[in-house]
Length: 107
Ligand code: HEC
Image 1: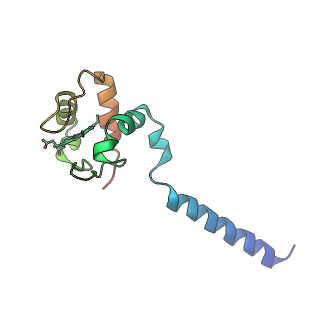
Image 2: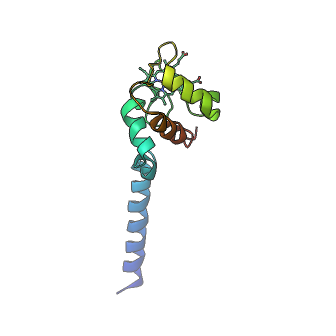
């Protein structure tokens, strides 16, 4: 096998690997957590898949509410203005999991 051949294999692998990384919308491992799944179902329609906001809905990445977990839990449970309340739909544990998940988002 020639050196040239192995160089080619190496470069193709690198290109393929960086394509996979570039196309991945967000870390897959996080989506698999219970909080991630709950977020995708309940929150991403307004706040976007990575918490950056969608249309008129605000981004929550790095918001003071998320940094202060208790405040975020209250907003999610009780709602505020156009933010619906989830206190009857989700358990306190589920809200905790979602808020912990959102806290892992990076701007
Ligand atoms: C129907 C759209 C909608 C959905 C669904 C929604 N939100 Fe919101 N959210 C809003 C709006 C609008 C606000 C701003 C509320 C205000 O103006 O006081 C907000 C505000 C927030 C805030 C406060 C941000 C701050 O800086 O004070 C947090 C935290 C939050 N949402 C988290 C969540 C989580 C977690 C979920 C899923 C359980 C969720 N939201 C689902 C629309 C939504």
